[in-house]
Length: 154
Image 1 (tube, rainbow, N blue to C red):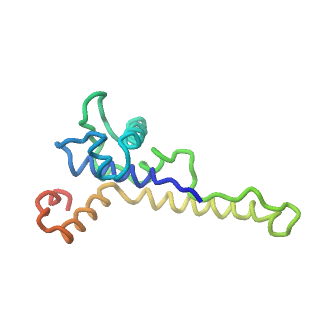
Image 2 (cartoon, rainbow, N blue to C red):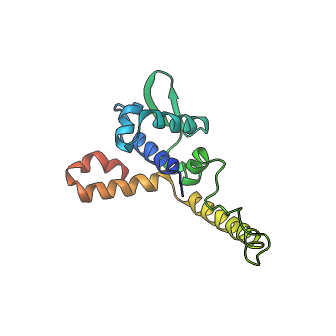
C-alpha cells in the first residue's frame, strides 16, 4: 500500500519556516531538514502558497507564514496538500455476488465518511502553534543548549 507523506512534510516545512525565520529558508536548506529533495519542497510550498498559508516571492528565499501559527490548523494544512484525498479508501474490487463482497463497499463508505468527518474535526482543533510548541519542548529535553533558540515558541 502506498501512502502520501505530503501532509507531514507540509507541517514540517511550515514549522521550519516559523522556527528559523530570518535565516536561509531556501528550498535546499529546508529539504535537508525534511530529508527530501528541493523540488519536492518547492512543490509543497507552491501548494501552501496557493492555499494562502505562506507568502513567498519568486527568486527570494524568504517565505513566511501568512498568519500566526495559532491561526493555522492541521485541517488547513491537510486541505492545502491533500485537497482531493480522503484518509480511508474502500477496495472497489470485491465480488458482487458474495454476501460480504456485494455489500461491504456501501457499509464501509458510510463508516469511512463518519471517520473522515471526525478526523477532520479533530484536525481543526490542533494548530501549527501546538506542533511548534511541542517540537520546542522536545528539543529542550534532547538538546538543552538550544533553549534560547526555541524559547519564543514555548
